[in-house]
Length: 338
Ligand code: NAD
Ligand code: UDP
Ligand code: UDP
View (cartoon, rainbow, N blue to C red):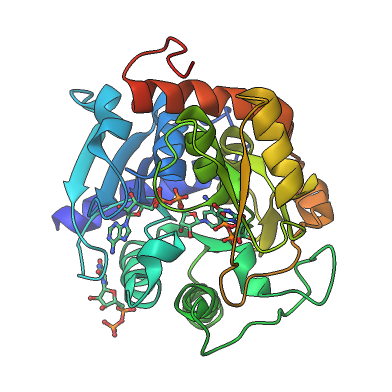
């Protein structure tokens, strides 16, 4: 009986979930899996600021309690240490499913993308919640179409070193669409392109965090391969805005969420040099296997249907991340790097 009462209440709140951002009449109960991580913790900040009740599920694989410490003691915030590979029972309106070992160093041999996604879809089904999957531009593999639109099916090596991540997310998309089509679950799919900003894991091997930490520590910037491969870098606040618009809107997706500004790794190194240390050296290293040669989102669909586009350029966003990295690496906000 308890559950029935809760669900009736939640049903009416879901209607509230369809009004535009910021105009909600009732606060909602929202789960953010992976909420102690980089993107998740920024999303939690926005949801709490909006007045929602937020439950974070995280096993702290790559996330950190410090990312959420400012919410401890808030009655509208709960943090559960839990691995989404195990089932969990909760009563909620919306599920933002971000839990995922998101860096090549961490994601190998991990069933989170498949089993964790299945559990969160099962939860969405049981309580009638709306489910948002954070998929990735990696579903396009080493793309033969440029820029990549959502209609492109991708070029992924199913047995390569990255396939646990690529194929894991592709399977997560498939599961989400099957639960949507077969069981009527309300799902939303975001394909996120490379994102950077404060609270990024310092040593998880991604290029922006590597270059920034290296420049601050007076180490050479490690450029893999010839450095001519491209990526498009999105500031985290733009991504969070896109995720919330997608969740609240009426379109399933998938939607590309990324900044179309495209940079070679050598150009990125130049921006990092300009921002932190013009004398930072560059050191070439062998590239990793199956590294996509280029990547740039076509965001026409998100522009048209979500009214969304990024507003923070790399040169504007990078200094915000550098301030945070400086504090975490040197323990204060002063420039100790000289
Ligand atoms: P992150 O590593 O900072 O966050 C992931 C969080 O998930 C961490 O807090 C980690 O502890 C948690 N987690 C991992 N496995 C878990 C499990 N089994 N159970 C519970 N928690 C678990 O990474 P992020 O950059 O914040 O990425 C968030 C999401 O966005 C991921 O799904 C990722 O695939 C996706 N994404 C990110 C980027 C990017 O550039 N940051 C690009 C594409 C897609
Ligand atoms: N699940 C969960 N929480 C819930 C409901 C389901 O973790 O509130 C898990 C459940 O244990 C199962 C998965 O989600 O492993 C898929 O559930 P579903 O009901 O869709 O499938 P079934 O259990 O019928 O195979
Ligand atoms: N890369 C680099 N130096 C580094 C780390 C990565 O040149 O220290 C390159 C990597 O080879 C790839 C690009 O930067 O071409 C982006 O790598 P990242 O792991 O950040 O993201 P992804 O490959 O998942 O897009």
